[in-house]
Amino acid sequence: MRISNNQIFDRAINGVIDNQIGLSETQLQLSSGKKLITPSDDPVGAASVLRLTEELDQITQYNRNNTLLQNSLSQEEAVLSNVTSSANRARVLVVQAGNGINTDEDRTAIAGELAQIRDEIFDLMNSQDANGNYIFAGNQSDSPAFVYNATATGNRYVFQGDDGQNKLQLSNNVTVAGSDSGKDVFENVLARLTGTVTGGTANASVKVIQQGEFDNFHKANYDAVTAANNVFTGTVNGAGNQITFDDPDATTLNFTSGEPFTFKGVEFTVTGGAASTVEFTLSQPEKKNLAVTLDEIVAALNDPTVSGDALSEALNDALVGLDNGLKEVSNTVATIGGRVKVATSVYESNLDLEIANKDARSKIEDVDYAEAISELSKQETALQAAQQTFGRVTNLSLFDYI
Image 1 (cartoon, rainbow, N blue to C red):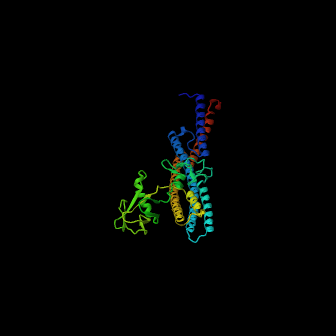
Image 2: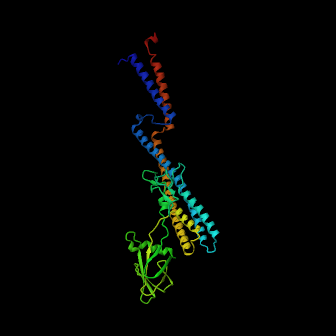
């Protein structure tokens, strides 16, 4: 077989070039730290790296959402903590206002402090986050959650947001609310349940003295559809010593005209004889936020004509309203704690998954320095051999021996 000079040169040059290419690729791997320089180096591995990178980017976004969520919940919890402190102080003042030895000046002073607490709580109900969004306005976060209407009668602190919640996705399958609507936290607070005498043949007066028992009776028997079902009639027997109500239990009580007796937590004082009747109607449930409750008690304390039983009823209304409001705030704080716990757990899971994905990606794309350096040394030796061989082969000519 004859080999021409061109073949000798081509083979030698190709050998040198191939070794230089391999050496260059190994040098690039060492300098970049990556084993996969182009997808063609390992198509299957490159696809796996791309998928793992997308998952890691998604986890990074989830962790950002988690941080935003926890910051938002932390701010809301701080606001509700201040509401709780202020409402508890208001409760102390309301109890103090019921002291029979208070002078008009004392009532005015208490009313003044309660008015300040009312304004403070109203301001907290319209708290804003760092971006200027109203925390408790739901999806209407560009506008205050509550507005004050000075010309209104009764409820002058009106909720104008909605019941939306800002929800953030923390993982593929976990979404957590990062806010609460003021409708749930402040607005959906039951006012004190009461009842009134609306008819009958006897003279009668009533007042709730056992609120818990009456609340249970009211909730079990109030009919929002048929008003007639909310009327309970007590009838004095022929002997005039007992009175029987037409409630589901057909309650019968000892009766003495003009002497108080208690029915379902309500103290009745009925003046009448045999066959006399008294009709007692359950009041329609109302909802009042804390600002409204405080506004009403401030008005009562500033009105010198409100005294005796009327003042007692106003104070009881305020106490029940404050207690119910504090209960809703407490329930919200509890749900915040639960959401923070979930967010923390998901965050830790995401971190574990992030470490696992980074490790898997590293095994595919990152260079093994020990192996690469060994390969580099081998390629350098091969290149040197190719270069030296090329030099010697190109010198093989008959002319060299003439």
